[in-house]
Length: 196
Image 1: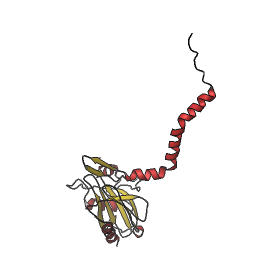
Image 2 (image 1 turned 120 degrees about the vertical axis):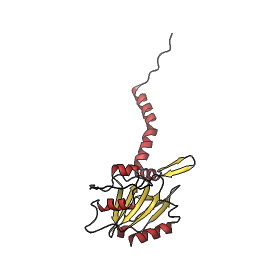
Image 3 (image 1 turned 90 degrees about the horizontal axis):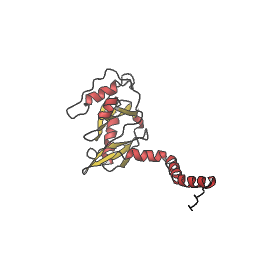
């Protein structure tokens, strides 16, 4: 005679199903609870390690300031990045400046073979521009801008291959290159000179 088939009742099946879903549900609850902290952590881990070298990339902001482009004809220099004149023109034609305002100074803060981050200062504002192939293609080089008087205090940190800096006006962290600013005091002084 054949063995009788095991009988599984509905309550037992429900308990078994709930037991199998407990760990995935707990993981989802933890991820949802700490979603902002995890998002901030992941945004700071934008680096790639290949063959002994590490490439760090600043991720563009999710929603850069709305800019209606005018007749912008940027010039890419021999190094593959926009020229200073093109960056100044981009800010000047952005529609974000007040009447009669113009770019007065600029500061290169982050530099890799694929990407550069610039601070451009007018009489009232500081603009953060991220220059790479992606932001040029999307016409989103201007990542953010804020009033000069809200630039400070600066907060500093470091990632594996670059430093990170946060301006007083907002919560976004930006990479800066150690080869350009070997110490936080050097970057602090450079930003102070930029905004005066």
